Image (cartoon, rainbow, N blue to C red; front, side):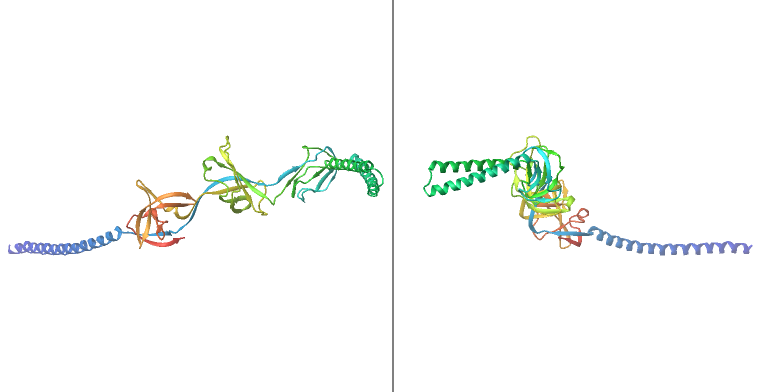
Length: 366
């Protein structure tokens, strides 16, 4: 009977011993948990402190006062200062052609001859008549100088010479009507004439262009009438020629076209092999210039309900500066107020920062 009482007692003792070990283990784990929680709290505090002021990589534009111009862009066409079509002044059959397309010619040069055979005969007779009357005049003059003969005879001989000379000159002028002469120095552009063809005034001619004297003609909208005038600086861009010229406006009309509501301007061009008549040209006309302007890249400017602003780099910290814009041209904006020379305007990365953020300049723009 005593044996059976010993067994339950041993079991109870073992159970109590196991419960005591678990309590000890639990206490140890709680201690470790407290230590870990303390470390986590410290790390969270450190990470939170770092994130509150972030560092952003940016590029900056150093502000300097300089020349700023606003441009008006209009499309125009290259034209020759001298572009003419030469016609004969009388009708006749073409008997000779002395030039061909592309050939350079001089002012007054005969290009085409028409049939003037009848006039040639009349010219020969007139020249003979002038020669005769001149001989008679010289003889009569010699006699008159020697006081031989009458004054009437001398004056009659002189009048006859003058009359025949005028007749000869008139025939020469008439003969000139039967040829086509170049009115300018230039090159033959088009000539659709053939031997034996009948040519006449205003019917068949030769187009001659002086490509050494070119200009651009364009129309400017009425809204720019007050700012675009003769003498304005202009950049002429010819896309097809891959060429550009910086010059000035030579002519700006005073009157506005009532239909197009625009006014014509002309710009003379230098002689260049790449430029040809009828090419398309773009005129970039400076209608506003400030020689002491503050200008920054347009993309650096941010917008808000209170106005425009930029971020400045001040010793590695972003500072907000309110600005007032002026004219905008070529991706640059004129700043009327809010900036000064020497300021470092944040450009790339400006949209991702806030005032007080730390910044690191990776690239300067200038």
